[in-house]
Length: 152
Image 1 (cartoon, helix red, strand yellow):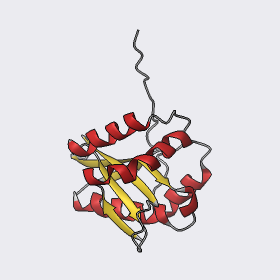
Image 2 (cartoon, rainbow, N blue to C red; image 1 turned 90 degrees about the vertical axis):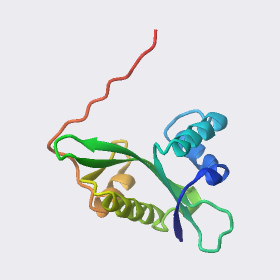
Image 3 (cartoon, one colour; image 1 turned 45 degrees about the vertical axis):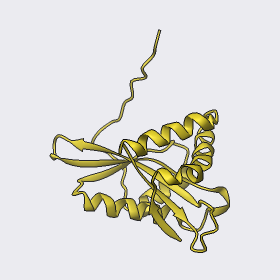
Image 4 (cartoon, rainbow, N blue to C red; image 1 turned 120 degrees about the vertical axis):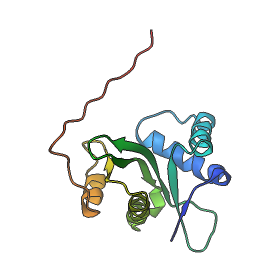
């Protein structure tokens, strides 16, 4: 398995799996909007996306993760938000997520980051176990809240 950093040339490979990721979380597919969203993130260096590919280079994508940069005012350092991670159904149990997260961790260290953050649905036990096995720990110091923005 090879882990590479995605570029604009990988959009056609990435978009179908990104659409499946969105559907996994109950969203409508919107393939054109999904591709446009990814294109903007890559074009403007607003995220880092890693792709997991098989060694035999058969043009198949095993999985991806997308990280967004943020900062910690308290530590005066960079933080990376592991916002999206998804493994193709037929590539699960091959440690794809572990390889992707190792690459993300290496990048976080290379950018002198203080931490990576990740969230998952409360009922996604497989993801929680994977994160914990990679060294993530549940935040017991801070509570997280969201404020949905509505448009009238």
